[in-house]
Image (cartoon, rainbow, N blue to C red; front, side):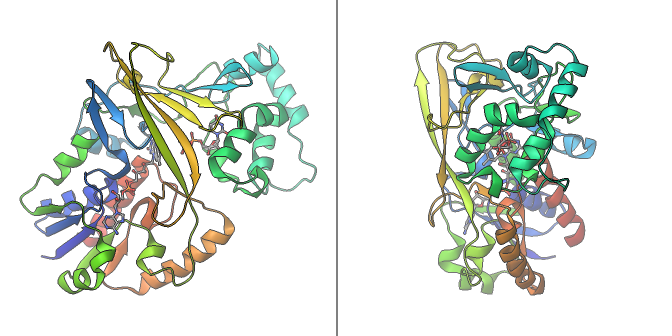
Length: 366
Ligand code: FAD
Ligand code: UDP
């Protein structure tokens, strides 16, 4: 039996800790924040589950992952169908027949196909080289200009022509009147919030949790005391930035309680225009069909990441991926430490992917 130290109580750390504890290992979980659950943390305010670090909608096509997560909470039937506001007009997302009708007045898939074909030619015949080319080749210039360019540049703080193409391939393009943001088979929001999932995972006699403790402040001591460490914080920070800093994108969240029962009529509204400083407003009660008298909204402002701030998104461009490979090579030689999760693996993972990665690691560590 091994004595594990898991750094980070986010989804990766919690899944790994729970499964190893069930296999009889002892696990200590360290968390530098004052609460469990990392970025999926939700907190009840005015009877509403508030997603403190941005809207989190669980979705997966993997039945095994869906069954796994359903052990820890009951999921409701929420389907993400965001609306985007661009230059005073509302459009349905993801890009589908409702969007194309609102933008072009076109009513049939054949008309839309033709319109996109006219607008989606790239000047060269190569594969799209960046996000701008990828977006244009998928949906044409009108959609790119109206719904993608300003939002993306605000979110990532860089021109679309310098961002990797895969970011925009996350969004479906459909020639049906289907506003579901995801293509996955299973989707929902846990009734009672996400925090309970992590609490239940970590509620095991073999698991000890220590909040408000930053591993980096006592690194040598922890390394001495534990045979095996699972690290879900930033891999570049762990190695003292010896190959330089990786880039991250940060966010700030402004939560407000309003004395109205319904502020915007939808859980998520995206604000495309660059003149608006935030990218989206979340109205939390709509994730759970809430009927409370008040409502809570959160404005999400993108920020340039600087040391000491929360690193929400890895910026997976060529330069960073090369730097990450150097850190990964160090990690591969390290017998004591294994890196996991969005920050440890420097990948733009969604929750279902994080669970899958953690379960894969459990099978290896057994
Ligand atoms: P984290 O949740 O970041 O957990 C890492 C933990 O480690 C943190 O609690 C941190 O405090 C702690 N830590 C770091 N360094 C140290 C240290 N040195 N010492 C001690 N503790 C440390 N996914 C979806 O599937 N659907 C969505 O709708 C969705 N929306 C998102 C919206 C936003 C705004 C963001 C940022 C992410 C979203 N995600 C979504 C992704 C989801 O948040 C992640 O997949 C998941 O939370 C990653 O879990 P993790 O354990 O890897 O990382
Ligand atoms: N995006 C966009 N317009 C929108 C919503 C998304 O251009 O109204 C782009 C943007 O580049 C974003 C990417 O699509 O980074 C992925 O969107 P998603 O909603 O998956 O982002 P996340 O929830 O991870 O922030």
